[in-house]
Amino acid sequence: MTAREVAEWLVTSSATLCRWRQSGKGPRWVALGDSSPRYRRMDVEKWIEEQASR
Image 1 (cartoon, rainbow, N blue to C red):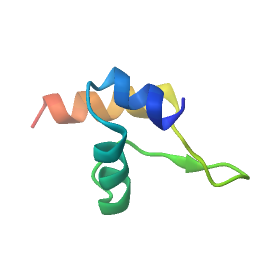
Image 2 (image 1 turned 90 degrees about the vertical axis):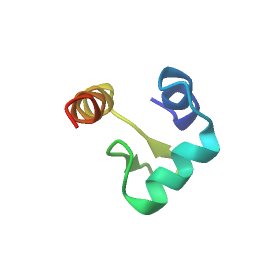
Image 3 (image 1 turned 45 degrees about the vertical axis):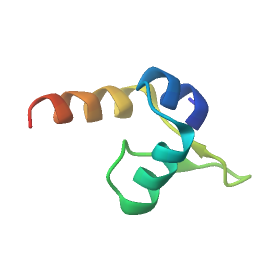
């Protein structure tokens, strides 16, 4: 998933998602060959569950 897709899913801005990436607070992400951040759906779902249990 792209950062934009994840931001829409989480009902947040792409800028917030970027800040989370930089601070290590958001869902796990990977950098592809072009360095664009990508997210696996299962990692985002896991992160959502972790946030709900806090």
